[in-house]
Length: 122
Image 1 (cartoon, rainbow, N blue to C red):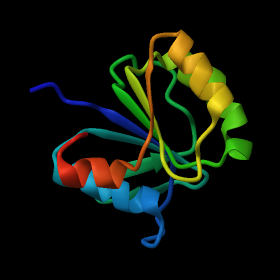
Image 2 (image 1 turned 120 degrees about the vertical axis):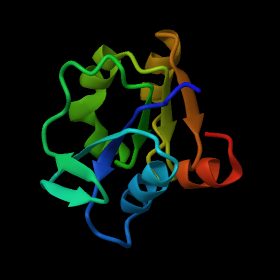
Image 3 (image 1 turned 90 degrees about the vertical axis):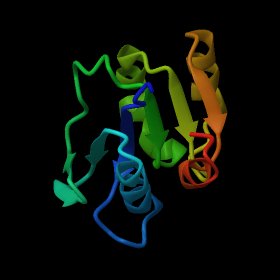
Image 4 (image 1 turned 45 degrees about the horizontal axis):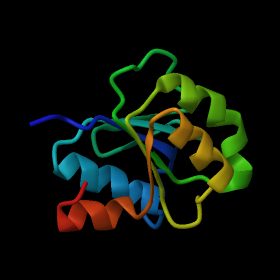
């Protein structure tokens, strides 16, 4: 089985946030998680870092929990990361960035990570 190491972008330690719930759901399914947010914290066994990983070429999926307005600082870093897939969760859809990713051969989904995990399509 291939592990789909996932970068949660927009991670939060607030239990009412979907990014928080996604970290728990990913870890429950034993999926390795790297988390980047605005504040250092810990969710489950995952440290939330404030710095984008510079050399994680083993990231399979980036799951986006940032609005389009807050994605700008990360676009180049995500492109450089060369993930296999980027999931734009509801509220984070970004057609222009999605187009750039598709042109680089990255699978792009406008979907909900939590739903995908719950129905086995992750």
